[in-house]
Length: 146
Image 1 (cartoon, rainbow, N blue to C red):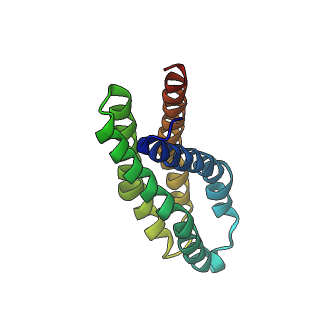
Image 2 (image 1 turned 180 degrees about the horizontal axis):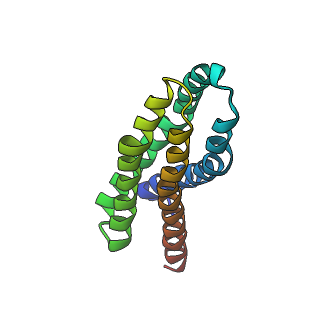
Image 3 (image 1 turned 90 degrees about the horizontal axis):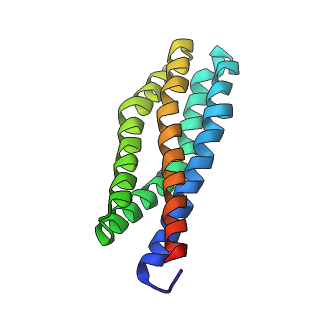
């Protein structure tokens, strides 16, 4: 990569996307399924702990990811960057409209049905972040050829 300002943006964007892709797979395969093993009498405390701690990790990374994604799209309004930002917007919509309400419900106590819906619904974000990681790998490969 060159010293062009968009190189730093691209590195930040790639880092945040790959970080979130790895994190979402861990959450999908390990963390969310572990919710079922938390005792009902400790579940509210667990959910509060989860929400506070995960927010410190996820929120800053997602904010950097969306900001760098938008700037890169504005600098390079190609089809690939349009798809990239569209997938990122879908991730945010899924997070805000599907996942967060389920977490809010779980703050009231353990609910096996909501936990199962949380796990099933999170496949959306898992697929979207994985798709974005693949797309960014392709963009990197194309840039390396140029």
